[in-house]
Length: 181
Image 1: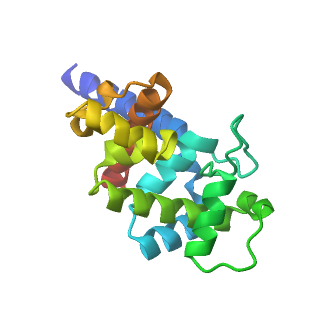
Image 2: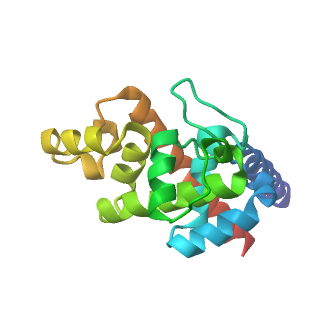
């Protein structure tokens, strides 16, 4: 009877992990691994974080366009993309290239690196700024001293839910990647 309970728990745990893994996109990682790994390494950003942002932002759809005009896998605004192209000295950039997974992941990883640098590697502030902009986050930081340690204090519900969701996806990705080692 004891072995039956142990095997039942193990089977349920495996089923749960596979179900969660499917929902957070690890089973789909092969589609963009080359670019995620290349640009995560180039810009010093955790590949699992990039993958988590892609999952949340576009659900792995390179053709995604938000109602606010953000484009591609990592949902980058065209104005931000033009600034990034200038900073990366990409002279032949045009906004139609944002749907190209390679360009989009390069720009998204670069932008995440800049935000991580700006916010001293604070993930809550970085993700909040990725969603709501640096200007909003800087205002919130002045008004809410413990914002950097408590995502629940973010005053915009959309951004609060966004940060919590990516943090959850990121933790699941990290957990599953450790199990697979």
